[in-house]
Image 1 (spheres, rainbow, N blue to C red):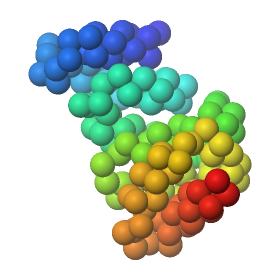
Image 2 (image 1 turned 90 degrees about the vertical axis):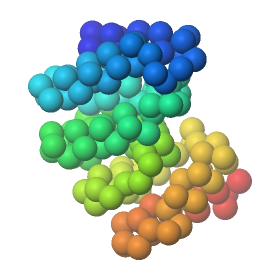
Image 3 (image 1 turned 30 degrees about the horizontal axis):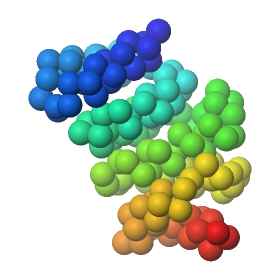
Image 4 (image 1 turned 90 degrees about the horizontal axis):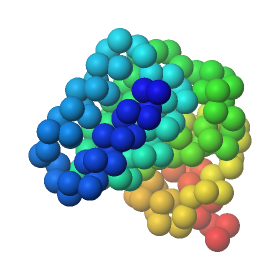
Length: 159
């Protein structure tokens, strides 16, 4: 599968302990090619987000690409939740929120906020995950960014 090939490249990248390897360049080119050709499904994207911890040096860029791809493909809350289910959908968007360097895409933020508000099942998040997301959200100026911060702040208050 496409995600399987990407997973193998991520594993190779992790084993080499460097961001400047041929496998890293090939990983980027392969993901970019799959995205340019519109070949990645929601499930592929989810699987990639579950593997990005193996390549911390590249995870910011990969998350940024995934967020752009979601917008280009026009994925909606319904289409994402239909393919992944509510629990995996919340995991998917929280990984992207946590690792993307700076999210300016308001449509993605609205999508993430709807998924998190509708399902409110962020039980998989650790206190540290939540802290990182709140920290990233606290400077947000738009309503949707404040809503996202409120969801995570409310979650943290329950601990």
